Image (cartoon, rainbow, N blue to C red):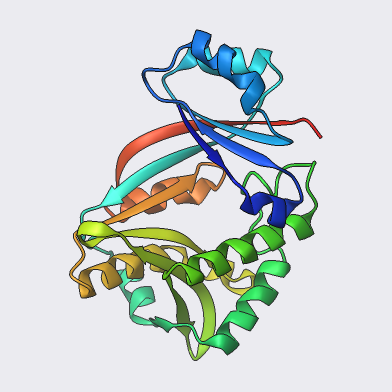
Length: 241
């Protein structure tokens, strides 16, 4: 198993947090031996979707299932769009955000832009904590060299996405979203589309992405964008504070 002490969550959420990823070689026995020392105020455990016995064992220990996340990739290949999708894409442009754009993004996030993630849906946390977590996450990404881009429609910013360049010309699509006032405009797939465009522009070989099935539209959106599945994890959490 892999253990990450998510120290940033103390800043973001006010609780200590360990994130544990179960690996194929792990058994119920070694999980039981380790879990007592690994538990924190907020413990997150990621279990491969086919490891049913460990998932059941965790629920018996008081862990709650909160979401399924899918790790996927696109091999720097743009999808074929239908005429409606093409018309929407042609109406959108994108460019890097400036400091003033970021101020607007903070306002959008504070206005509960994200509502389907495990933090926003967890009754142990307030909406303000979830928003603070996203803002902290984005700022950390920018400090580490990730680039943030705005989506523009008729001179208005309608959304954003963040790309991080890894080794070997592989990019990670870290986070993205459409602003609340534009969620009904059908712009969602443009975010994923332009992530691939930018990867190709920078001679990238692959875009990695992770999404939660709590966001119902995300699954079809990623398959539309020629993404293939790497891994599927069921996420369990436990609060001890």
